[in-house]
Length: 193
Image (cartoon, rainbow, N blue to C red; front, side):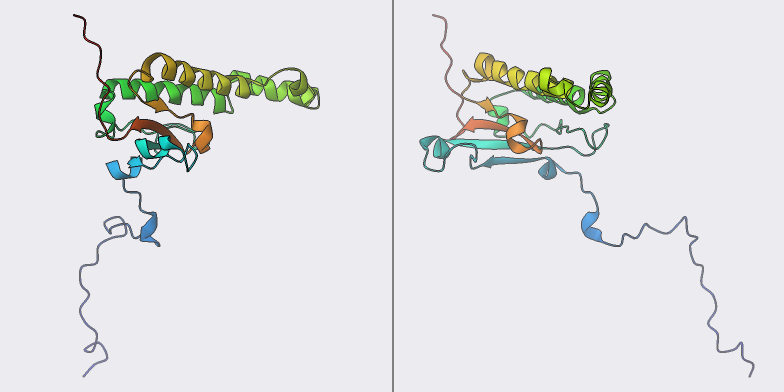
């Protein structure tokens, strides 16, 4: 009996390129589903706990989208329409217009390589950052424009529907919260008679 008789025959082992990817920690596998992007009708954390508004409103939360084709340090929100209960108060195209406009304004404010932010940085270095005590920085101006855009939209469009878009600044730019009435009944519109 030779020493090679005890060795099992070699099975076909797939090459390194053919093996499935093994991750060290399966908790970090990204799963892109509708549930990851939004959380519908949670309690309203944007009002005081003893307020009557807390029991008669809910928040539809659109989470920050880290897969969005932008730099990771620029906040952007998911363009996935959550459906019910938001579909009672706005259409999918209105939702997409809102999210894209908010994302574009956030991109202008937070992009470190935008002309305004680079110019602010250069002037800040030359003036030892004293320039920011006299003039408002580009980033702050653009963030303020987003705030005023959301306020105008709430006043002109969403107030009549009984809903309100909460400023992303209140959530630390982690989610775009939309306050809707609860129960989810659209306010009746006045008919022309």
